[in-house]
Image (cartoon, rainbow, N blue to C red; front, side, top):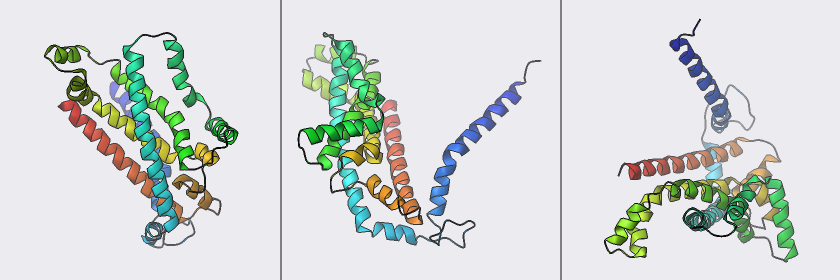
Length: 263
């Protein structure tokens, strides 16, 4: 007997819902416990409170580490999108010797375990006697963020219709004008996507950062230090703030990309 279509789709719907619940349940627990009125993780609650959020936003250590994380992530995003875009143009539009080797080499960092990359960077900075700081963190994050930028931009530029650029040049546009008014508007959604992706990767990175951080800690390092003393509603509040912030950026980038596509 052939299964009924309705039954098959019903099973798929149930499986999809179960998978979503499995993925979202830990996030829901974190958000829920961030409003727990007591410091102990008990359920059911005896009420709801926002005092843990107040403690977080008035905590100087948290605000300083957040500022450091944003600074690092912005720098990494800017560097990654610039180098990644230029590398993608070279890899998709030009033929040169050892092109396949270069293409493979660019992707090596994302295949390495984070702990191996962190130890390698630590050894490198120690060998050249370079003091660890936020600058070393930016350098380390760029190592694994640039390959992601290249991957995203490669997928966009490989399907790019070069005839629109040729048409602009036939009409008298210079190379710079063609890029500014033709090429850049087309690839801008991908560039924004790369910036959001690399920002998120850098902002959340802990393991590589742990090996190459200096005295100025980033947010993941501060959270790790707090977790060593046990899980508290304060940590849940920080996690919720970071989650909402990240999701907001993703939604904005997604909507912007859709608007540009429609245009």
